[in-house]
Image (cartoon, rainbow, N blue to C red; front, side, top):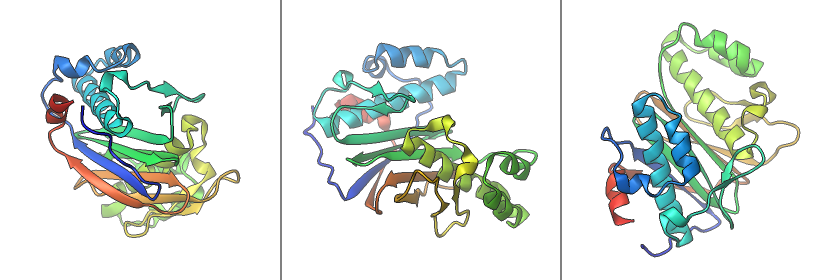
Length: 237
């Protein structure tokens, strides 16, 4: 077992993981809890199943290194609304889409992440007017047609990262707060009345992806780690 990694109070660790096309090895499946294996079994689409298994396996291995435990021994439980947690000061959040998974880790600080593969739809503006805040939909309407699709996902990931960080999930109305849509200055335009002092960051993934991280409190330094071979990490666990 690798030595325990140190995570200080002024840093957020971000892991961008390239998900392999191959099926996950038995050793990785052996790390997962019965609940995680049951969740994996509910995926009917094989690539989605494999992405979930690899993402959870990587999560367990990274948690193990932060906590100084064996991956299979890490106890992951859920808060009232389903947000996964571990005992102690470590906070984390996970998302995966397409070829990538995104994981965020912080000490004594709520954190949320979201990553989305940019994809086509008949009318992203209509979707925004239905679910987003009015000022966000207006900003999207003012965006040039060629950039509107990417701007929609930029907005979506920033909002989703926030509701995941708060632990409210789908119970939080997406029109109860708003974020900026521009690419260069991610920020909260308006927060719910019960919330304040949150920090918002975009995560650079590459063409045709949008990703964001939100954490409670003043902005912390982000340490971005890229993991192109997660199965090699499994082999060293």
